Amino acid sequence: MSDKDKFNFPGGKIDVEWDGHLCIHIAECGQANGDLFIGGRQPWCQPDLVELKDVIEVVERCPSGALTYQAKDSSIKEKPAEENTISVSYNGPLFVRGDIEIENTPADMEGIAFRATLCRCGHSKNKPFCDNTHEAIKFQDYGAVGDNGEGLSNSGGKLKIKQLEDGPLLCSGNITIKSGSGRTAWEGTQVALCRCGASKNKPFCDGSHVAAGFRSN
Image (cartoon, rainbow, N blue to C red; front, side, top):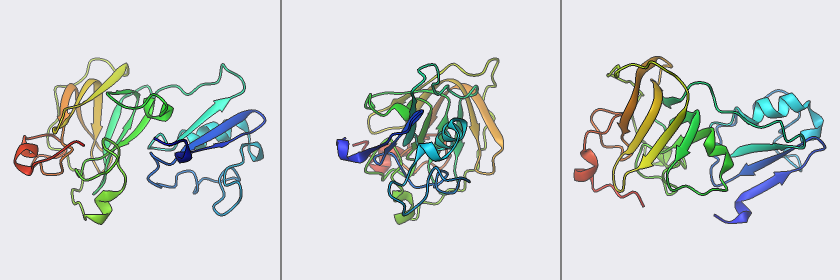
């Protein structure tokens, strides 16, 4: 990834960084109340125009991990959500939150340790991350989840995501999957999630990546 993909917005108490390589323009930042992010303004982000707590709250809304912050007070750091969740969006990607460890991803993408947006249409040019290609190819899946899973006895902890070569995302940890309607649908500790776009049992892998000729690179 080029440094040209990253922009830093310094402030007196906190700096904000935006990673264009991860952003899919959900616009949680731009739609937020206040003057932190104003489209068309230069610079677009001005951390000193709002309270410190508001900078943190708005940055942590970003679902892709494209936005991160670095407070001058080193004791202020982002913490993972108490529950590891994977939300299956309507005709779109997987929104992941929690204590995330994604195999074979760059160390300088700090935001994806807490928030990530993962491709499930199979055509992103930025795998495993979404790049909005699902819109261009008219990917269709409304995010229904049919299986309940084995259940959970604990929550939180590390959520490990392995990118199986030319295959699914193998997830392990305490995992809650939410359907496209927002329903808590599946709970368990091991799951293989489709990322080729061809499974007949989305969001779960059913082996269709083989016949589809899916390539992870």
